[in-house]
Amino acid sequence: MAHKQLKEIMDMAIQYETDANEFYSTAAGVAKDPAAKTLLNELAGVELKHKVKLESFDLSDVAHEHHTVPETHDLHVSDYLMDKEIAPNSTSQDIMVHAMKREQKAYEFYARMLKVVTSGDVRTLFEELAAEELEHKAKIETEYDDVVYKEN
Image (cartoon, rainbow, N blue to C red; front, side, top):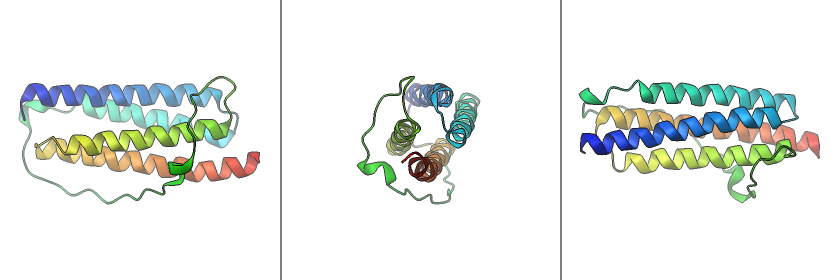
């Protein structure tokens, strides 16, 4: 893969993480449930760390070896839930559903990029980020159960 293409993919990933950080920061300000607010603030910080990790990745010296990343499981809670854009009057349930959907899209982004990236180091980075996005989704799905049952 050409260096220019790899740089474009990394730039897309950085923008994805920037958007995620901004979303979680905004959503935390809207969330009324204290546990949801805490989780959303935590995820904002994690997405910022992802951005920094991507920005500091040195593309000039990528190797072609492959590392293994622990498998992460998708609970699929959000598969049957309707997504809504977040507004100042959004419920914690609305925010959590939107967050789950965002994490699924982030996972899918990294999974798609793994099909085109050939560098072992970049593949490892994207595998790690994909796994972390699924972990985030699982955390949100667990919190969603708590929030929804509390609100209903």
